[in-house]
Length: 86
Image 1 (cartoon, rainbow, N blue to C red):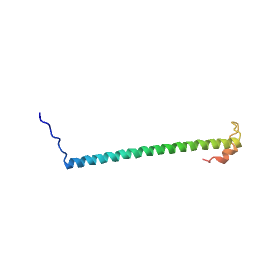
Image 2: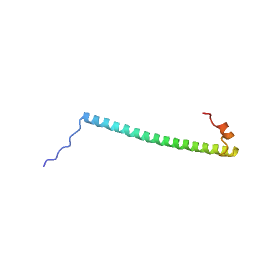
Image 3: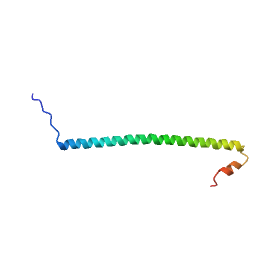
Image 4: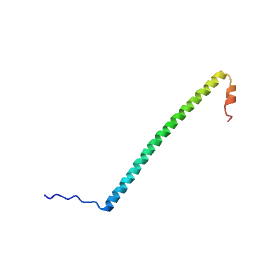
């Protein structure tokens, strides 16, 4: 039984493999960047949601300190002052 000699790659095959490897590395890098950007955006979203919640709490606190809510009264003075007329 004869032992097969390993065949050598041509320069064109080597160049093709190098190009494929570079493309693969670029895509992998871009996916990494995308993942990092997604994490940054999720963090920004969390911060903004917290800001909205804090604003709602402050607004309710201010309302409660200046007004007494009543279902019998149509609109409070605070609502007149602090809401946009649509």
